[in-house]
Image 1 (cartoon, rainbow, N blue to C red):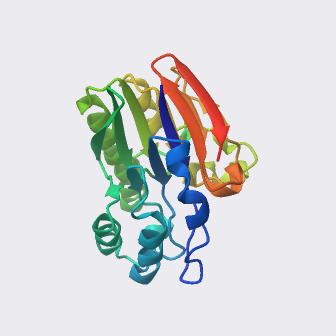
Image 2 (cartoon, rainbow, N blue to C red; image 1 turned 30 degrees about the vertical axis):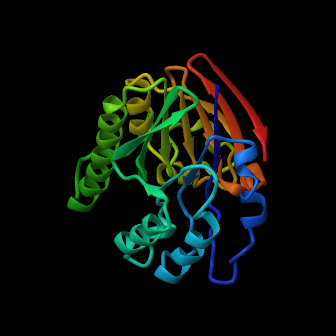
Image 3 (cartoon, rainbow, N blue to C red; image 1 turned 60 degrees about the vertical axis):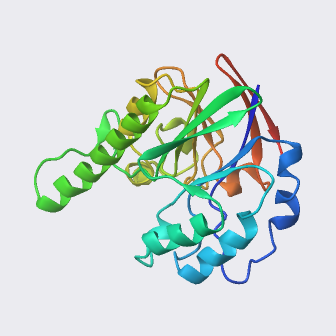
Amino acid sequence: MIRVAAVGDVHLGEDARGRLRPALEKVGEHADVLLLAGDLTRHGTVSEARVVADEFGGLPVPVVAVLGNHDHHDDKPEEVTRVLRDAGLTVLEGDSVTIPVDGHTLGVAGVKGFGGGFAGKCGSAFGEREMKAFIQHTTEIAGSLENALTSLDTDVKVALTHYAPVPDTLRGEPPEIYPFLGSYLLGEAIDSTGTHLAVHGHAHFGVEHGMTPGGVRVRNVAQPIIRSAFTVYCVEPAVLEVSHG
């Protein structure tokens, strides 16, 4: 049994230092790893990234993160990533990490993801250059997620994204914005690679529980949804249980 804690969309600003730390100090009592599903900052500034580093650095479990759209807003994702990595966080974008847990191995593959929509109601790489670039970006990111998941040879595989891989967890969001909240291509990458659990954020008004067409459990861990410092999923190759931290 591997215990995976997760949270996303904490949107920490410079005035938020210390807000989550008391609860996070106890994460080692509940989990073997902590996943951060993007939108860690409000506006993607380096100063906000330092707050995130102070909150999530030096915890008793490995911390693995992807960035979200807010973390890109100030056009400094490389600098934000550097601050987080300097604090000991693993930041993924099209790559993966393997974590040993009590004689087993947990593999986490991560990408930010992007929009585009879902089967039957999605964009296509046709028409204007801008539209083709939009869909090409999604396609490339989904491909990098698939490659990262495929590269893992671990007991458990987890896909970590910011954008949603399925529409299930978007219920409650306005349907008009679904194409900007995720892409079915991420779900296809998850289904094709023997993944056990997919974790995402971004959908503040969605729901926690969903599933890919291939039967992989999907969990929306945006903090406005889970309403706690983190949620813990207990994962085995054929089993998933959940508790809240």
